[in-house]
Length: 308
View 1 (cartoon, rainbow, N blue to C red):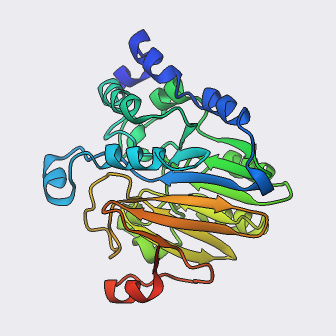
View 2: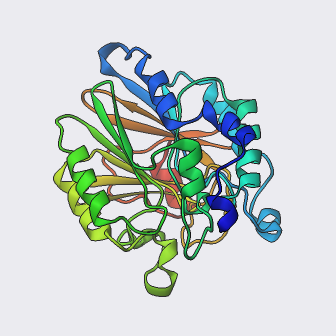
């Protein structure tokens, strides 16, 4: 861990400079809002291909993140949010490889990040996010665009602290639509994993109940999350939670049947929030607006999902 706490070399700092959050937010602030206060953006989930060769061989294919980034860059969107787990492990070498690949596919559109557990010094167990923060900046931040408040909350340590919850409550204390991005789902959304010894599949425990209460009280429109390499939608406490962890990571068994590589495009207007799911094979479907819980079996999926 000592190596990761050192100041990163100048070469890596320069590679990361254009992707620092504050710089990307300045870029976004200079962009005009579309007519009618329409906001459109992409959400891309976990992207690291896996530390373990056996997972890459059995549950993944090469170049998924690259292919999906190329595809979404071609669409008429304002910005992209990547939900964390950009690298297999938060080390200098892994971040250097990530930035090399990102530079090849980045079009210049604002690219914002969420800190994931793999982006820390160790994916599991005791870890720190020193290197992530030295390269990108703050891991908890907010921004406004097109009359919408967007909040990024760092759940990469498998918890959210009292200080974070206090900040989240203040960040959401505004009128209008509110969107939250975080890496891990709160654990009570047990559709995506278990509790106890295997709670990491389900998400974070510390602060989970308080988090859900805060976003419900604030009438948040959406919470977008990754961590589980799958897709799903769940309505909880009046808030729609969208799991989108298919950005390029291995699709190993996780308790969710809907495991496929994908990214989301989202359009927010004064009257609605609409998502489209873009699959790796080019198929696109809408997330139904009135759905409470998406079925997880293919035969039901065909009845519920509206292919575009």
